[in-house]
Length: 564
Image (cartoon, rainbow, N blue to C red; front, side, top):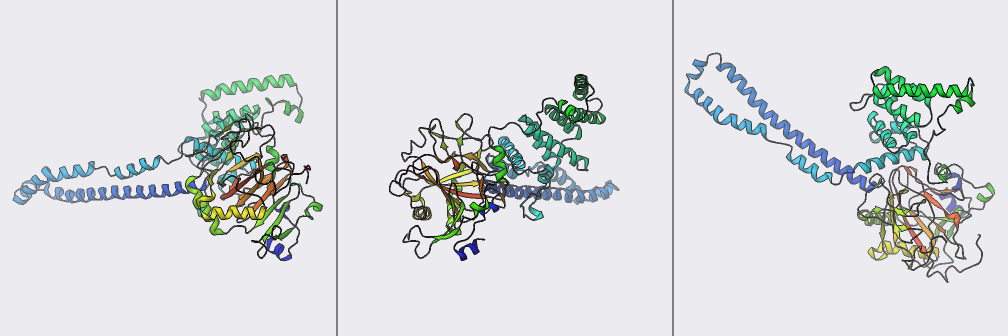
């Protein structure tokens, strides 16, 4: 569409129709782990070869002596009657067997164990593994994926070859269920235990978990969701496999008693109404969520529920833009595309080169740190418990105005100043030239890397009225506008969605989207509440430039209107 758009200069925009903890969410760090594991495999193979060489030497020595001793013991006196044989026997027993003993006792694993010990300090820990599991379940919920789809690795949008697709084993599914169980998330416990049981029933084997253990988890998790009859069904199946299972026998009596009690209360009513009252508490489904707009957010991430009427869409165009004949763009204007009308969101195409983007990534990778944001319940900025990082970036706490971390932003971020490299300075200047806003009071360029499962849930970029000290430490006023540069394409997921107006913008490498967070009056535009959807397949690199009020007095004049 873009090529046609630029040929026609003015065209209809179909953007609306096309829109739809931690190591795990930083592809850069995950890449490092891949190479670490590759080095360890090489070291392990070296160790195996060393052990094989040692055993080969021992085997040759044993084979040689086997032949010799077999011949010697047939005629011991005749054999020892030869002085050379007598000498060599003395030598073997006194010297060579001692050398063999030394060889057998030689520990060939020293180098490998030393290497493993050094590398282990960079390994993910239990919290990281839990975070990876939660990220998979987050993707499962957001994109409404069946457990079998995830287990087979055949994810929507995945174009990887067979060599890159991995399937989940029974053990993997069981571990995912256990993570959910540890969080009292019985909904996901059931889903993943059922998948583990299904794979066992289909003939897959496991050395660590059996059907009895899985059924034990299943009966309890469905009971906790109010499904007594299914809990009883799983318990009976468990007892068929192990009639002596103590807990299952106790549960069987309890479940039967509870069902009998319910039927007594319900009488002989039948049908759907009676079945509904037969539930323990109607608690089946995903656990309660702190985010009131979760459903809307996830719908937009899937490309559903986008609100753009044909009439409004017909007024969206793409054009060549020179910002009122700016000297840098008179001859080579930029390609500007309308993504949304209210609030106005525009996209600039081919705004940075591949070389520039690679340089920004190169500068950012060594300092990628965990991002933070305020907790929507407490207002306190806290760290996502499933992410590990050397340093932590921050976003303002709406109560104190200070910067810390929260569990619903999952990415790695780094800040780059204009002085650090000419490319950063060049990008900053380009932003100023195109937007017409002064970037000398803007925040440094923030570079973020969202790996698989990486997201940033709905938030405002500007400080609201109930956040009196927001950005006070910067002394540059509120965030008047946001410039978001996409530095990679994403195979599936990763959209930027605006939950209030139900808009969605999809990542496209080398493009940037821009919008104002504040009205000309200085009041916040609450329609700009937005989120970064989880990355389903691929790797998402973005950079943000948050432009502040100070310095814009003669660039974007104040006004009383609050609607555009």
